[in-house]
Length: 228
Figure 1: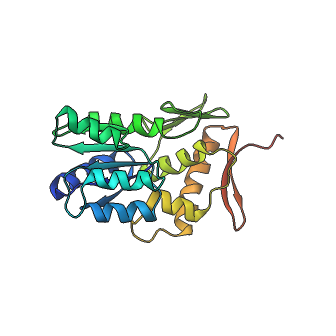
Figure 2: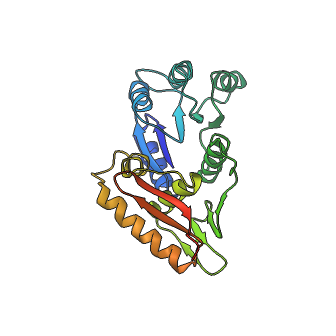
Figure 3: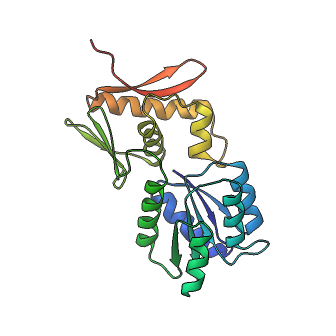
């Protein structure tokens, strides 16, 4: 999943980004409200962590702006303000949740999981995704079948998660790179192919009854295996 973190305190931002990446999230970091708004207007995110007190434009104004524009991305307001009126303002402005500094990293991660589940808009809203005889545990990053299981690396997990949340739908290489690599260094279609190959080998080892199919000049989809 791809997140936007808007936090002007750079040391805190760096720490949060490190935590999120270790937990298999792709993260873009903005350091003021205008920059956050530019990211949100030009990219698609699964969730946003939005600090209130930022230069150029405060977090509440950013939130009100994107909601007015029809952007319903899930948002956690992150702030040092703990007064009830401040929380009410954030929630009434369209926030999905409100987390007060200082906070424990486990709580932040739990709130992100809850926020993205609620905002996913799919029937599969728990921490486990199922397709065929394969299960993806989004809490432990484990891909399993009745025959075996694998702990997945970061990009492997994010790619199979995207496929399992959108079974039978074609996802282009460009969609993979935009969703998973984001603004990271030049991720090209051959990189996507490499990770698809890793996942295909794992599905074979799992004796999965699903497979990743390639569609020429279109992309990849997770489908039920053809019956022999």
